[in-house]
Length: 382
Image (cartoon, rainbow, N blue to C red):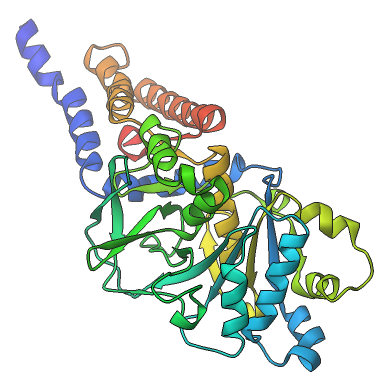
């Protein structure tokens, strides 16, 4: 009789585990967990701006103010050359141009000369041609581990007229990245691949430039291996996008340009630039906006945040598989209690299930706040 009772009630915990296991298969776990994870990330988002980064924005106001002198946007390339030289004079540790310059243009020779000169390294933006490959390709860190990379049909690089010398491409990083199926950017791949070659993302290229050529490959590979850069199975790092108070500082391009032309002394600008990695881009004409869990953000701002996450080690960490499996077993507690007769009444069973669900949410919030570990709660909750 006891065996019959065991068999009659065994479907409760076994059914609960089966539902959780099915939710863990394929993409369902991540997709169903998104609303919970997004809400917790908004609640626990950083409230302080990242240190060591600065965004220079060619905004609509700068275009309007400088249009009579510099012409319409996009400006000639020698304008960017002069801006880079001034940023070097002010003590920038690296400069990242998040502007696609894939066609030859006026002023290319001046910009190429600046790129070839010693001083703070400059990283130019390249782009992957859509659509990206569905299956990630293998990319090898020089002297480091093999990690996945986004596969593109082709990569468009900066115009050859911008190269410091024939056959010598400038530092570059891929600015384009796939987004999630719901149109939200939650993570950033570190490597991109096309036709058997690979390129770093723009944020990783900025990290490499700031770190110095001697440390580029080995240190990056060691960081990924040691877990300082926690990658998911697709080779991406999770971004913890801050709220409005945690955005990087932004300087309008007009202010930088007037300083470069010898305008009034601007000690605050000099202090903001000194020692920083400067990301220059444009929000003119509402270009380059990307949706995140914390609302729409400018693409250049996100690149700066991604670089800061790599530099400071503040990206999200995917939960280890063992932790997810343990959560699933713990979440079956109410079903096991019901099976053993400790919560046979429907009201008690539902109360126990609600308490367990609340406990899972509190645990997720605690791990996210303390160690930036991002749990997938869909399967345990189901």
